[in-house]
Image (tube, rainbow, N blue to C red; front, top):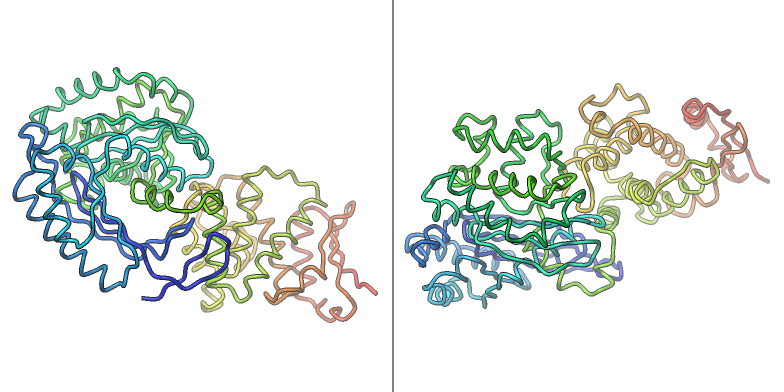
Length: 507
């Protein structure tokens, strides 16, 4: 399977997929990615809930039925990787295989089943690569990464690209269920006692972000979205206010899981672990006092791939890397998207609109994504572009940022009226991002009738703010572009800004 990936230097190349097989305490999972890149794109994802870690805490052994299910899953994954012509397969094993007395025998059989050597991660190494997953998935992260699996909980401080020393504790969902004998009250006491013995981690969390990694916490977040009628069903970058989330966590601990809204979206094997995940997260919030909880779809697997990138590739902005990839793959002229970044920046500078670093990166990403819907039917380009962006596999992007990007390109195709798009996504963006999306779209609606998405044109036709006028300059050979359509779009920009639109012919 020939797929397209990006080199660290930014050149396009043809490559083969890479894959991670993650042998965890609860699930055994295969994820194949398009290639090794700063912005990794999954092309196949399959998990089998084997429950390897069930009863390890009390018996010290991996359950034989779970071992059998895991070995059959690994044999299947071997065939799938061969079918996809995966170039490299990285196989990881974590807490269950690490802690069980029959772990070595299982790993020997597992290597034969999957056909690849297995890296047994220590607790410290598991914490480190999980934190690297957060570094890979968030823009300038600052807080505490917490990865809750079936057998263990890893905590490690992250700030920018700096990963602190991690700690691992036996507070995974299966482990808690095992040692507590199924008693949630006993589990809560175990969790509280363990976390109170790790103050050096939680005391530095106050006022910062807690990055929640792991399937159980993602499942809880999915149920919380359903309970609050949240408009965007994307996990990565979803932010929960701790004060609001605590009541929901207590509800999960006290209620029958079957009564929770949208519980059908959670696998039956996962449901018994929800209450244990809620207990751990509640205690982290209570003891650590984070300003927010950010749900991460990136963890150990993505951290392992990130760790294999060269330093220059690691420094790239994950959002801009992904937007650049899509620009190369789907735009009529990728260079035009880059020119649009500079063209809009020149206008915004002349207009004097303040831009933060976060504003600039979002605007540049929107410009790179502006033409990805051009192959769609004209009547649906706005809607399709909105869906591609709002639900795309982007890293380094929170949900208001997603809404801004999606709205910018929607308005570019459909016009500037806010009423043309759902009030739910408008509310997600917020009033500031909504108005910035309309402004950027108004600029794009002028750029495209001039350039027809071809490179080399926009630098010849600058748009500037001069006093109370907004002025588009066209060189004499392009003067016939100044028709009613272009004049109408200049008028719309002028109305948005309260300025007089002018088309000026040079030479």
